[in-house]
Length: 218
Image (cartoon, rainbow, N blue to C red):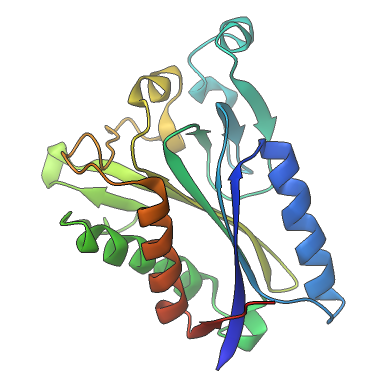
């Protein structure tokens, strides 16, 4: 069975975490690295993906700066999203050639990790056909609790997911999340008071199960 290094980066800036991803990515491409799952909590930041539209940022740059919100363009898939305190961002940096050369299966796998983690905390979550991410509720009341945006280069993955644990959802009001005019929610909003470390441990456990990993303690 393959092994993965689980690394908790704590609270770290977006660009700093991106640098860590790129270092691991380069080693994997050179054939001398290890698959990783990075877990991190970012300060306030809005990111724009490859398919992003600046029209989906509803606040001015000056307003974002006043609120201490950074703005970054990225090479991940998807549109505009927000990261901040109370949110667990997961960055799997892994060589899909040792798992499946299938981007769709990879994204569905990440969704399953999130769905299974939320179920462990008593939250029923699901996919919505045609959309990426994980949702709670039905019909028009469906709300996104986790966003996904990935990048693959030579079958090595970067970027990943963002799970709202105890996120201040007010910040999503400054954007159109993922270009969709649908509500967002969090574990806390749904009445689940869970510690960040507790949720990180569950995410790591389900990630290893879904992607057939054992933990590498190196």
